Image (cartoon, rainbow, N blue to C red):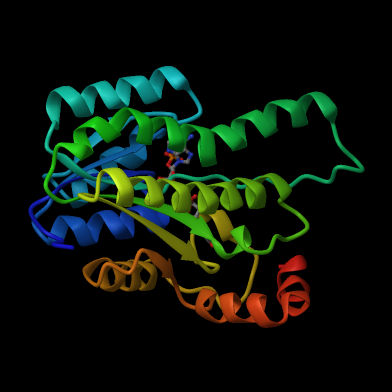
Length: 248
Ligand SMILES: NC(=O)c1ccc[n+]([C@@H]2O[C@H](COP(=O)([O-])OP(=O)(O)OC[C@H]3O[C@@H](n4cnc5c(N)ncnc54)[C@H](OP(=O)(O)O)[C@@H]3O)[C@@H](O)[C@H]2O)c1
């Protein structure tokens, strides 16, 4: 697809992978809007890219999602690319759990990583459908294909993002072929989310470079870095993929 001249919303565009994607859209002459919870991070991003638009939004709150969609509808009705990047990861040990805390955490993590994303897509789709060429880009993880031990809700929500992206792509192909549905499946990346853990991490910029290459080729399922290998291992020796990722 054409990668300039769009109006682009990047959720979680104030840090990590989101800001790397936002920078790439920004330097290709797109109108870029980012959202996140921290005003300080949004302001810092605006200092770096003066023309960027920022909306403070907590995707865990339905009212914030509605407000974000309202801002887009009224101020940025030319929206043609929605990048669902914001995500969070918590660890749980279900054999040693603080039940009340866990019940809250499960709702929160599921909402930010999956339910909130689907709600935002639902609210933005009417605008996206009006454009001759538009796209939804969902960010998922190799952990969607085979999970690790420590973050079961995260892995399950990313598996949900993977499955949802496929179904939505089928629906758009059949009924609204002007809306392309991409999924970027990422390996471990050096960001705040993975600070202090993991080896062989790639940079957010490497992610952005690979994603942009794939977008330009309409490669809808974007397997970034080691995820290409993971997909093959998972197909031919799933036990090995499970062994590699279980303790990751
Ligand atoms: N890092 C990895 O190894 C890795 C691997 C595979 C997939 N991913 C996926 O890549 C995406 C980005 O991850 P990252 O590593 O770049 O994370 P990050 O460095 O922690 O950045 C997360 C971004 O999302 C925003 N955010 C978090 N919670 C939010 C909420 N409730 N509402 C709105 N914005 C929110 C954050 O801003 P505020 O904190 O200000 O809200 C920040 O801009 C996530 O979907 C993640 O699951 C990451």
